[in-house]
Structure formats: structure tokens, C-alpha cells
Length: 401
Image 1 (cartoon, rainbow, N blue to C red):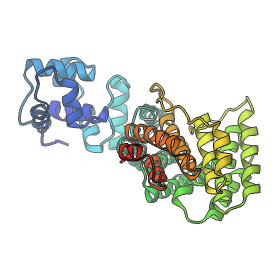
Image 2: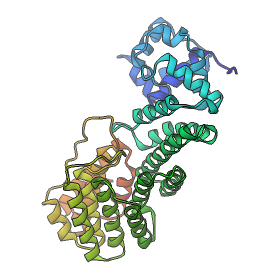
Image 3: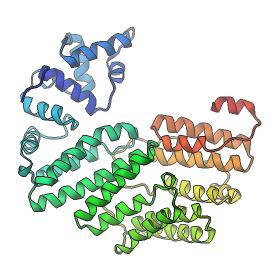
Image 4: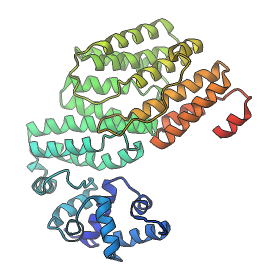
């Protein structure tokens, strides 16, 4: 199959999208002092459409930005690799795979019945590459959607052993996309992808993976108007079998918030205590990625207490100090601690506002807003919009607005 632009042009677009950069962001990477960023952005569009070719200086900057040499970008011997990435939208990440691995996966794309263990490994590595703390939820959704589509295409036609492995990978990918929709403030998208994850896990007949998907589904507390349903989902995760400590804690965390939304203080406290006990266990071989950080635990406990109207208890839990607002260093793990930290700060600001502690509420809200905007954590921003700081200290209010 052919495409209607030069291979080097398609490769340039793929490399940019693989980095999750907009054209403007690439222009910032290429610019030196005195450069017109708007003109650079326009030029990038012309390069990617094949209407213009970068000059020698521009080509050198592009290669430096992407970490490739000029022959890889403009010549290369991997036209087939560029072609299948261009046609599928699956991200192209230089240096992540060998030429042989790229070619083998491209052949499987052409004929899904060729999928094998290497195909599964390819897509798992790719998912891991986009499961990083320095990426915004909307960008991760954009990168992972074509990956999910590719996996789904494979597991319909692959042979039985590989099909099950692909189904399990599809469930994990769908759950990750659901989490990113959740953080991106899209409740409908979060629920739809979570349901997809549960279906794939059940079809793969993996009880632990199904329990994980159910536990995560019960965590969509701010996207569901039925607290009893959330409790049922969390309990259903545990009845699938014995869960590793972190997954058990995850289920009990989310059940606690369901009880809080239903106004059941005793059951909420009981489940929070049980979740803390599970997290205290040292042995854990949980194979799936989710947030069990101190920030996540604190934010959920504070959210429960605020929901129950126990503002003073929430402040006591916080020790009269908001969570740290500094984002951690980027690391190839999921989920981004910045999401949990931003949400914890937003819950803290809410608690202070309900307690009429205006200065502390304004301070925590400002930090939460800054962190949420930089991380793309729209769920935290939505929490900030759900309450009002008492009408004093106008200087802080102006800053917030």
C-alpha cells in the first residue's frame, strides 16, 4: 500500500506524535534565540505534508530533538515500518524495538493470524512506554487508543494461546485508558472503557484480572450516582478469590467511599481501617499497575470524611498540613503521583473551606490548581470547582480566579 506523502514526511509526523508533542511544542524544541515560533510551527506543518523539506540546519535540529541520525529520519531502510505505523496510528518510538521486531509486528498487522508471543511482548512494551508520570491523561488516551484497536484486531483472529494473552493485555490497556478518562474529567469515557476492561478480563477467564477491573470500576465514585452499586462492585472484586494486599486495599478503599456517599460512617471507617491494614503487609506480588501511594490513600480518606461532613476529622488526618505540592520526578510507572497529589490538595482545600479556614483553603487550592493544570488532572480541577472559599480574603480569591 502507498501513502500520499513522502516516507520521510510520514516518519517525521510519527516521531512527533510518538513524543506526544504538538507542532507548537516541537517548534519550541527546535527554536533557538531569535527564532519565530509561529513560523517554525507553520514550517513543521509544511514538512509533515511533504510540501517542503527541511534545510540542513533544520534537519540537524530535528534529528537532535528526536535522538535519531539523519539517515534514520530522511533515508532509512524501514519504509514498511513507517507505513504500518502511519496507517494504524500506533506510536513509533525510536530505539524501543529492533528493526526485526518492527518488521515482524508489521507483518502480523497485515495478517493477524501471524500474531505470536513476540506480538504480545511488542504491545506490552509499548503500553509500558506510555504509562509514565510525565504525560497528561489526554495525551495518554490519544497514544493508547490505536494500541488498543490493534490488540483488539489481533485477539479476534489470533490462535488460541496467543488470543488469551492478547485479551488480557486488552483488558489492562482498557483499564488504563479508563483511568486516564477519569483523571481527564470524562466520566462517560471512564465508565465505558472500564466496562470494556471487565468484559475482556471475563472473556480471558482470568479471575485476578477481573477482580482488578472490578475494583477499579468501583473507584469511579465521582462518576456514578448510585453508592450501593459502587459498594457491590468493590465487594464483587474480593469474592472472585484471595487478592494480593494492594488489590485488597484498593477494593476496600473504593468500598469505603461508596459507604461515605451513602452516609454510612461506621462502614466507611471500618473499610478504611481494613485497607490500611492490607497496605501495611509487606509481601505483594500484584502484577497490575495502580496507585497505592500515601497521597492516594490520604486523598481518599479526606474525600470520605468531607463527604460525610466530618471536616474536623479530615483536618486532623491531614495534620493541619496540606500534602506536598511538588510533582515527583518522572518515572516509568503508573499512575502519575501528580494526579493523586493534585486531587489530595483539592480535597484539602475543600476541607479547609468547609471549616472556614480561608487562608489555608486558598493556599491549598492555589497549589492544587497549579499542579492539576501542569499534570492535566481535570478531576482535581472539578473538585476545586465543587466548593467555594468563604467570602473573605479577596486577594486570595482573585488569585484563584
